[in-house]
Length: 195
Image (cartoon, rainbow, N blue to C red; front, side):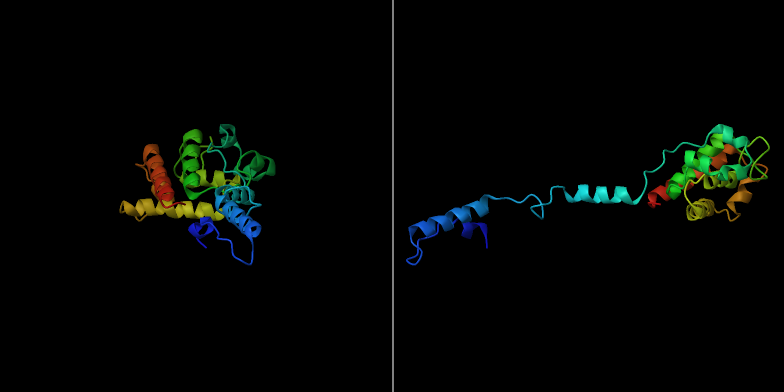
């Protein structure tokens, strides 16, 4: 039934009488004037608000992108698995591949960069060593770390380099700036892909 048919004055029919016709006209005017703001009269939130509320209950808030404390660089890697340290840092929160790579760059900046092993005696880290710190502290999971490794490898492949990124990191002529550039290039590519 269209709005025009609802607003058209109802002509009294011989069976209804004037009072009944007036009642029908008032009902039709009420129905035309009434605008529903939601799909259901009991619903008070918009669809966007309901979706945001539902999504907020599914996953914990994303972590703030700050590298783990500098003091942790001196601790043995197995200590990073302690529940208290995990709770204070990553705590098993989900992060994207792009966030994992950005945090990898922050760990290298904060702890220092190293080549030839996952870590130096002073706690400096290579790319893989920085990723291990994040994984042990609970920033993301194994799938996130593996996807980040694939993204790093893809960034090297785009440059025509086929050697694994952990070996590329260890090359004698490699610099910290080259490593950070690679990690951030991979992070940007992951972000553009929505990962």
